[in-house]
Image (cartoon, rainbow, N blue to C red; front, side):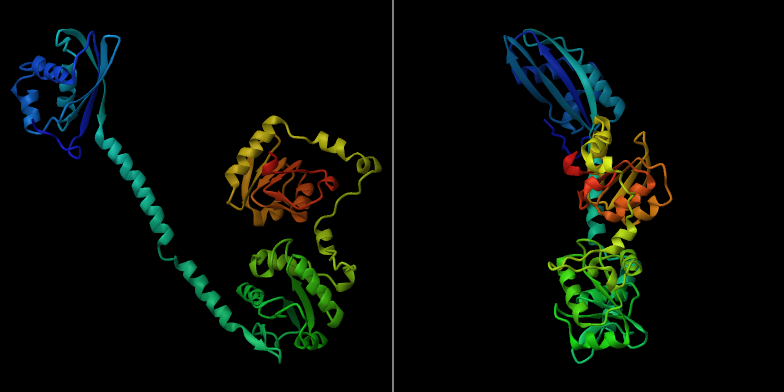
Length: 407
């Protein structure tokens, strides 16, 4: 018998078989050839089609139970649609197999090319994804890389302490003091050329001397180390302004917007208080988040307030689904009271977007709920904020705050 290659077959006839008795595979195949012989004419004779390779090897799978046999017949074909359909229909005229009554019903004719096409599309997507991931950067990426290299080249060593500094330290009246070289690089990346690094936790003499003749702003990281460095420099240098990166972030990693927001929020040293544990009070966060005075009954009944703003099961389910969808996107969804999505914005632009809105009911975002975001949520009238994590005192705000792990 001829055998058609699985690669060259275009269709597969799939038929079910039911036999009132016990038979073997050769009995079924013999019946297929024998009872269709001469039925369809010489051009569609099964034996000749198989010998020429236009019909493939007939596969029979049988299962015998309680004296009866059932199973499936698969016939691969490289004929066209009409001829294959005729062959399939001819299978149903078989009424006996061996000594037993039998019934064959064609379940479907599978187009092998469809499954191959689906595989091609799926594989093409994988190949394209790999190509995009490993391809050369676009023109903007190349420009950014060149610009970064130029900025790094602009770093100079300043003073006898050879501190990393931008090229404009001597040109203007102001300087920005940061902790390390990487911080200076980030300042240069975003166009600030008058930065200088302390290069450690101790205050170099160069910084002390500069503070006597320059308007000096100290810009520290938003962590415990930044607090300690600020305490140290305030003790020995003439500092005009202080500011810090957002909580948990370092100056070297913040965005251009965050950098300029921090510099705009700088305050004079007299507005901060450093206690014995070197804890830094941040008045500039208070400027960003001004909460209304609570009435005495509100301060003494936080549990009642939380009960009034608890989530319904529908809200909880919706917030959880949206949170899972946002993981890794650094984006935020704004929802109205009917849980309809009003819009999607980057987390970096969330506070600015909320300033112009008054119909926001809930905010779900991929990020950490901090004082700035909660303040903006309060101003917009939002009732719920759902974040990946939270760093605010929930009892001090009328906004219901929840994290993805709590949903």
